[in-house]
Length: 599
Image (cartoon, rainbow, N blue to C red; front, top):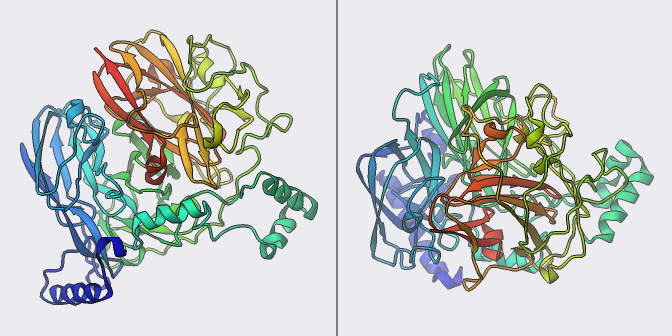
């Protein structure tokens, strides 16, 4: 951390000051100490027509250990901003750092100059300066905010943003809790990025070795196990490469608390409790469950969906999911397991403040398969053969797809055959045109709407998938898309390069342009072995799950390895908007574009 001027002498001096502040009760902390585990019903709420927020750098206790954080409102997460649909709000953000900063209002419909992305339609907030964000609140639901400057999101600058509806909430609840999941490292994020550039598997301590070959051979036979390993070695890839950054360096937090500190939420038996889950992680997907308590999903990315009862769901980075639970008396663990099983965040939902819930055992780390890599072995893992090959590359535009009649979707979920074409296409990769930025090519990419993903496919309970989501109220009968834009998600893990169509972002890159009122289908083909949460600023899109006017509205879509996902957006918000992978290190390494809506 020498580039931050943190010498050993300064560290000791800061540590002594921190200890003294703690003694007199003035130490600012994003998490309680083990001796102060009283129930915390919610994050500190702020509301009103005018809200003042200060961005600063300060020492915090994270899991009982001092760390240097970038904070808004004095802690991590930042305060819970509570607004009302229909109101106007002014958020005065003062930057007390010695570098530029920003706040992006994730998922909110705002004017482009208020979106908070430096270099796109906003200059950023200079050191010592105050910027006033002013905009009307045009929606309701669960959202969040975070910095879009450097690695400040990784170091703590994020928080929940809850918007109450203008009118009665259709879901009656007695308790309402925001649950912000995140990842924290005591390393400087620039060091994390440098380590990944030196070696993409730097933090992967769960690689397959000779020591665990016996376990695999016992499960599927020695010959098959050796053959599988040879295939992966031939591709110079690792089947355990699920997450770039892992529990080797990360402490996983729930509302700023490490697992041992056990954030707690109270309820009375018979009450309906709303839990608003927000994934504010920089690089971590979370698999969320409350053992013994079914969850009814009612909102996704802030937008209402038809209720779906599940026992677990995967929360991609930047997504939000609202669930309603009605537990019996007792204590229950809110368990958010990192997708690679290298750690977890946890809290307790309890009717008795003194009761503790046991922590569920961590499951074995998952392995990717050849099908996850898009390897074309016969029927490709039992899926349908290719029905409409595509050779579109490099952001090429294509006429909107023609419909097919193949069925698709979860059993019991109504599917309109007229809506199936975009999700039934199985894309065979043509000649690669993406250069050094694309070290791996998925031979076959297909929809994975009903696939919960690695580590959840064999779960003995109900797991949420995109294919189950239906908009709560049908949208207007929309005309077909005017055109398709095809983008390949590309990467080179050895050189830690991430991009769209093999080209890393630069400010002089042409924007992806749409005309106001135009309907455009974005087709995302993931050529990489990593999942990518792709986020579009400024607009909601219709995720194509085969439900026509009930396709769910989202602002972020998780694209699994070797997946072909598509969404349709109506270009209503004039301006320049960021479009990027929400894994912070991937975005920083180049997986970023600008979408521009022209008047």
